[in-house]
Image (cartoon, rainbow, N blue to C red; front, side):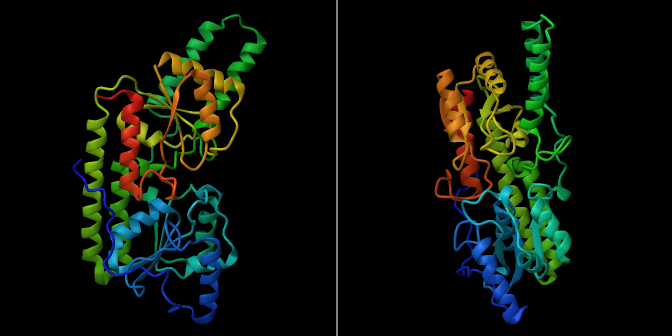
Length: 362
């Protein structure tokens, strides 16, 4: 591989957060609550970068935290609103945490992924905000290979059950609704929020975060932009590795427990079929499981992917029914002991190897 896997760490140890330089005792109390409910002492939550006297950056969850730490380096102190092992979609913030956001020098977040964060940022009055999707073009909902493949299977289903009965019509409508739920993350027409799983778009977000840090801290603007360029280059190399690694594959289709990999599939010409939608623990209907049986057989799928943190039971049930194997495909929403790597690049390369095996790439 052309990119080093090792995490870049500042030379100076990272404290949990800056001392209460902006808020005195009241701010310290707010920080204490934040540490108990939204930040851990290691992993993705509550780790600060730099000397502790730098720019105070609050990140909404791990992919945003990773950008802030990599680009900010020794000039920033970064905290995450999500503690290790907590599902980021489920994050809820207290009024004190909302107030803490207002005292940040910069907030880095992804609009539409965590509704509580969106609302809190609106209420906080924070001056400097870096919103990820404002720096890249979101993928259209239902676009690309998934939609075409879904239409193809829908047509085959109609041809195979052409008696016109109301029962079959209802079954078809059920499939349509399941397909919508499986790829929707916030209502009809909503965009897939997992933009960081596309290295090319994630590089564009990195450049935007670099500009936002330069605005929040002009004294170190050159360093931020240099770091952002270096990170974007590493992400471009990761993209090249995915393109090369997924060549000469047996199939384009992969089955996942969670509809999180639309951006990745779109970038590399793949087709994702998901068991559940946004919630990895949601139970699919019998009709959806039957549809996945057909997809696996027709598209020569031999693997059902689940997430390290969730979704294993249903994925293994489907795999057992079909005589398929299971493997981990990680959406990189956070780092836990179960993650197949210690940072974004390590996990993405583990994902690449898992996909190569599942798709029969040579």
